[in-house]
Amino acid sequence: MNIQSIIEKYLEQAVEKYECDDGGNVIVINPQTGDILGMACYPDYDLNSPYTPNSTLSKTYDSLTSEQKSEALYKMWSNKSVSESYEPGSTFKIITASVALEEGITTTDKAGDFYCKGYQEVEDRIINCWRSSNPHGSQTLRQALCNSCNPAFIQLAQRIGAPTLYKYYQAFGLFETTNSGLYGEQNSIFHDLDEIGPVELATYAFGQRFQVTPLQMITAISCVANNGVLMKPNIIKSITNTDTGAITDIEPTEVRQVISKSTAEQVKSMMESVVLEGTGKNVSVTGYSIGGKSGTSEPTEANKDEGYVSSFVAISPIEDTQIVVLLTLYDPQNKTYGHQGGSVAAPVVSQMLSEILPYLGIPSDVTAENSNSDNLITIPDVRNKTITEAKKVLSDAGFTCKVSSSGDENSTLVANQTPKPGSQLSANAIIMLYGEGNTVETSVSVPDLSGMNLSQATSALRAKNLNIGVSGSGIVTTQDYVKDELVPEGTIIQVTLKPTLTDAH
Image 1: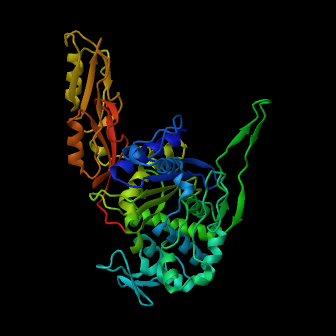
Image 2 (image 1 turned 90 degrees about the vertical axis):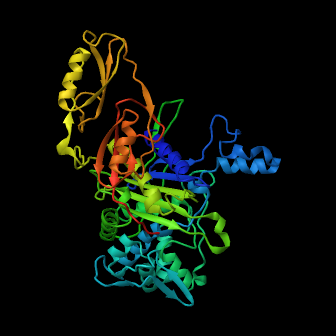
């Protein structure tokens, strides 16, 4: 329930913020067991009132015919994670790389193994790299994955060949439903092997011109995360007989070993490099090892109105991976943020992981980190002092005080303070003091800080009597309280800053 509430919160925020015309979905899975820990779609609907159109459908519902209303309700009820397929884009490069390493086609760090000149000629077609104006040049496989370079992966697929790729697609479970038991689960859409020509082979290498469901995609990635062992996705933990009280636990179902543990470890190492050095920097969470891959699939010329699909898949920790997250956002329209998976989907996955990883008890390699930790001041405990005494203590420590009290400050004692004593803040941070009889905290709405630099974010929070806690440098990519969430004045809003990043498809 906790993980479900976390992902629903951030998914809704993402769909609204990026103006995703066709909504979005997210899946969280334990790769070692196949247990689905969370699955959400947005826009959603009220399960207690399923025939009431949600806010999106209600805009046009009254103008629809009876038949159209029925179709619209069925679409509103559908679970996009299993009922609709999509082109995964560059997240699929994880699969292509896995096949190449398992077959001994290449190694992770062979110098000059691929060359990007900004495009790749395939028969009479020119397939551009996302960085066609500034080609990647000579690359290893690791660099090609970090750069999300399409020409390099086209070259790789040409070496592997369609028959071998199809053998592994079958092994990864991509040609059949996952048998999850979820209602309405659809299968993938691939060309028959004998229909695969050079162009199809090229586009398949980087995840386009075929379709899989999000659940099929995360199940295949979870196989890599689970040392090459494919697990059946599972939505039921146990069954209780209400008559007898007997509990039947549902055991994990191992499907098959698809790639070796050695290959899986190499791919996970490259996924970690994507986050540390490549197009996945926006997904990092302080204190945790994370691997990932962005995806941005573009529509065909004949279906331009379908828009881009922006996605990001992340695994954590790299060693003994315990969680895989796949976020898919359909047709983001907000031009301020664009549509690239690494800049749109990755920060949202980072927000989810920043709450899910500690909740699961996965240890962090740091206890606390702040980009200006040397300049932080510990907040003293001024409760039960007079307001006058408390203001002097806090002022001497370097803080700014705001007081909520109807009594004489020379005699009224401080009943509460926000933030709590022992927290650490920079100089001039705001401390709210509540006198006896005035202990009800005033709540304010949290502003959207995304894209702001440290100075801008600090000013925006200070204008609402809120404080800032900082990790990293650059611009704000995540914040622990979402836009418009109500919090008490004085609350510390933790933000993560990352360098400005131009991402790949």
